[in-house]
Length: 163
Image 1 (cartoon, rainbow, N blue to C red):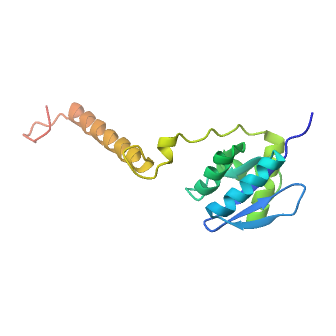
Image 2: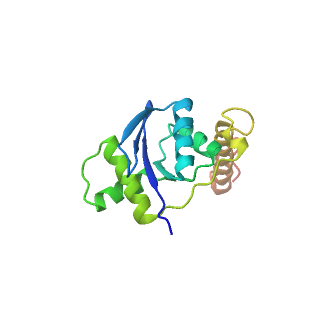
Image 3: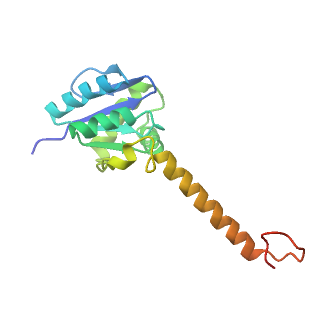
């Protein structure tokens, strides 16, 4: 049985630091073109990519990997940091992070991250993530207001308050 090759990627706003266990580390731009080229190389090799969720900066990489059908794991940054600490790695640089993501893959074999639904990929529109977040916030606010009305025991005539 052939061992899976894991590639660690530390994602930043402007670049991706990539650590390949059998090749040298490199830094590429965090652009769609560079991410597609990287994904194409991963397909040829049959590699599994591991990267941290990075507040949206990982979107370009994720979309390139999904399009090329490269298996990947998007891990919680805290989990990755805790793993590095447990391995005795104190330093925090982009290259070290990418190398530790490879180790995390080898030792913990994180689960495959499912591709985003097509509707969630759209940054705008009625099904986009911003609209969904807004609807959730509104629904939560309406429920909180209803709960306050139910618990209200004031004896004054306050609009929207039922004794």
